[in-house]
Every structure is written in C-alpha cells, then in structure tokens.
Length: 439
Image (cartoon, rainbow, N blue to C red; front, side, top):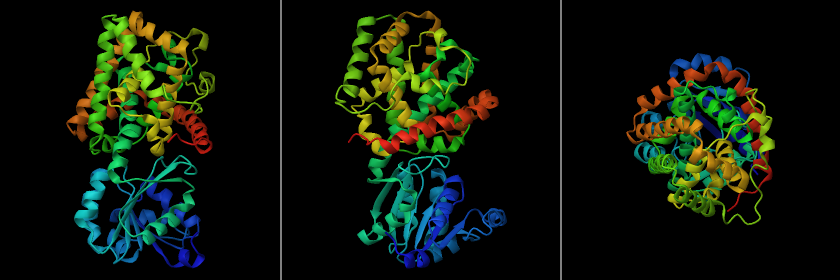
C-alpha cells in the first residue's frame, strides 16, 4: 500500500478530460492523492476550472505544464489523436516520470510514446476494460510495462489500486489481439444488427422474432453502443492491427452460414454448427455458466410483446460468432482476462444458445426452413459485410456516417434503453466480481 507521504508528494497528471479522464481524476483525488493535475484543450481551460472548483484537482492550461510537473502522466485521448498529442506535449515530460495512456488500442499509443518521449522516462501504460458509467470494482485493468523498472511498475499499481479492479499484466501486442475479439468484433456484431433493423425499418422491441432474454441482450446492447460516441468504436476497430482479420472472419462466417441456409443444406450446416460449438464449448468442464437462464434476462425488455408469442429466430449473429471463433482457432474464454461487460454478455448468450439443446435446435430449424426471417438474415449478412469493408479500408469518415445514420433511426428510444441497459450492465458487472474467469 502507498504511504500517506507518497500520496502527498507524488504528482499525478492527466492529459485529456473526456469521460474516462474525469473518472480517473475524481477517483484518484477521492482516494487521497493530493496532487492531481489535469488539462484538456486550451479553449476548455475556463470551463474545466469551473467544473473542478473546490475539488482539490488542479486544472492547468496545457499538457506542457502537466508534463513538466507530474511524476506519473496518463494520456486519456482518442487513439486517432494520440500521436499528435504526444508529439506536442511529450518532449516536456519530467525526467524520470512514468507515462501511460488510456487508449483502447495500444499499438499506435506505444508507437507515439517511442517516437516522441525522451529516453529517460518510463513507459507503463494501462487500460480499464469498462466505460465511465460502469463501476470499476472487480473489472479487468490491464497494465503494460513496456519500458519501466519494477519500482516504477509498483508505483503505478499503488496509484491505480483505488479503482479496486482486477489487474492483468500483458504486452501491448497481446492486449490488442485479445481486445480485437472482446471489443472490435463484438461491437461490429451489434452494429450489424442495428443497421439491419434500420434497413428493415424495424423496431425490434415490437417484433415477436426479437422477444425473450437473448433478444433483450441484443437490443439493449445495440442501443447502448449506438447512443455513445462513434469514434470510440471506430478507433477500436480501425486502429487495432489485430481487428481487421477477426472482423473479416466474422463477415465470412455470416456469409458462409447464410449460403448454406438459403440452399437448405441441412447436413453441412448442422455439421459446421456442431463442430464450432464443440470447439468453443466442448471443454467447459464444470465451469459455471456466465448467464444462468433465459429467464434471468426477461426482465430487461424494451418491448411489450408477450414471451408466449415469441417467433423462431435463426440467431445467425450468434451462430456466426461461434463459427468465427472456431475458424480462427480462438478460445474466447482465454480472453476473459480482458473482458468487458459487453463481451461477457456476448459470450454469455452464445454460450446459453449452444448449451440449451432445445434453443439450438429451434435456431437451426429456423435458419434452414423459416422463410419469414430469411429477409432479416439477408440484410444482416449485407450489414456485416458493409461494416467489415469500412473497417478494412480504414475509413473513419465512412464509419462515422454509417454509425450516425443507424443511430439516428433509434434515437427516440435511447433514453428508455439507457435506463434498462444500465440495470442489465450492473447485473453482469456484479456477476463479474463474483465469478473467477477461466484461464
């Protein structure tokens, strides 16, 4: 544990006061760190001073002042801007200081640090695997010691201990490889559902095909993503070197399964689904399920369609995800060390579908023979391919347009969805703190 004198003398610096930057500043200050220095763009200086007045947090005019004074500096800026910001303020870094970042993609962050920071500073970065509205207690916190002494790493761990998170030590390459799955592909699947519903002019909470516990997760998480800032998800997908291959495979899995469905090639389709399920879920042992039952999720509905009127659903999005993991020979349970609440839901409903034989049989039969849902599945395949191509091209503007166009369709329901989604996230967050992830 850090001493009281350490909390009084060590200078902490935060460059970037977005939602996560503010969360870090307030949490550190509340934990007793007396010298918390923060800044954002110079034009936000007066606004920040008013916001933090009386908090004990020192608002500075720019990153030069934060960098010169602070012993530990955290850049909390979007990944697409990290190089420019570090180029500007990095040369002012205090001799012997520790520098890290809070970006969700570490390859461009580490490249910026190596390119612009003095050689006499330590690079020990981090990533809280949750958003600013999710309690940090029990959530994974990745610490990456890229260029630092054991003594400096211990200091970083003492600084971040107040978040009460589960610390995971990784290299930046392993971090990006794992988060390509836990974040980039997961987000793409939900975005593809949202785009599908938008193209179908369909609000899913009024559709019997999207009724029930699993469907509540699909709808609520999709609404949660679309109500947030587009650039967060774009950066995760486009700037992560590992994401493009995984996103591509997900799109390929969706297309391959859909082609088997429309040809009604039952034997081949079932064989592929069973092989994928056995690969991902066949070695579970006695490990507790992530989501215990469909009934657990029924309480989080946005719609009014009775559960008894539920119509069959192919669950193509989930079948394709498990097939994608199989094709990549990727064990999603090994990625629980970097789980987010959204990934936990995604893996949890995939797990529940494949481990409930009745549900799985219903999905297989619907996928092959139910013509009523074929139109939705075709649109989903096209949406997944559209998102994949946008990510493959590295097209930030195209991503923004697709994202905002889809979000616009649902915006009238974001308020209600935020309330229900928050309760659902709190539920899975509590389960995270009481369940030990599989190794």
